Length: 423
Image (cartoon, rainbow, N blue to C red; front, top):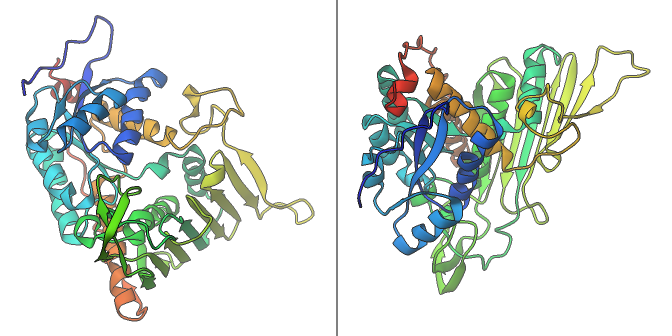
């Protein structure tokens, strides 16, 4: 397929950032929403251009490109990386291909956004993190897509904790419950195969809540004690295409090789205690993520199904008037909300991907390190691996290797010019 260089920016307009995306199903659609919309909401220093999307089925990827707003298509991710109108590669594929695609993109001089979990194993995540560190010295940036960090209420919770409003953290409890696997006749999609997904509810849902806890607490999980279970051992083999969350099955059964649910307790580096539950078997729960943190000076709670709200209790107030209060996180002073609607006008799930794009584009333009980094994704992977080891050993307490101290960031000169090819 012919390659084309990104068009020159119009006079007075910011330079372009050509984006190439690999994968176009559920996460591809969500990421496309972010790339299409961010520049229309926020005053970005670079203008994202949806240069090309990649998938193996040419007819399907052409249909996706038309629906999602991509200018061109590729059927080989290597060809997408080689395009000179692509400066950033967005990886939205199953986890088994994350490492190969992301490392190749970094080595080709591209910035990378990789959907979570970073990889299917600690070894792959370590290799990706090394590649990201080497690329950082050359001016390429890498970020992992934990989009729930970009819920304004979650980001504001991080601000309150950072200000010391909760005091010393004592307890964290978090659950992430879904029900799309309750039916034993649901087909054997790629999300139910260790070969492609790495793990089941643990990597799919558990990765999110592990990252949220470490992000909000500002410290790593030091060790875990876990149990996991696969409730339905065999499922109908998939017939036809699937996004991983949908599809039809045939008469033949195949083995489920990942967990259906995982529950674990953990200890943070400070000594605070945490409990986690991730399942795709909670009948009636569609996407129910709930979190509560208790400290010496207060508590806060968050519910993804009420994602514009944060519950906060200030324990330093007199007992006669103290209690949990509802904070409606829609004020322009709250994170990300300066560019959105008047107070009280709610945002939704898709806005997290728009905010993710804003943060990454600003980091690329300024040459600053984006978060969460591949190193953050590696730390989550180490926790997930410890959970699996503990569950395999009857909930034996299993330490998580401590992350190394971050090295000083190397300066990145002329970031915008290097990124866009425009001085």
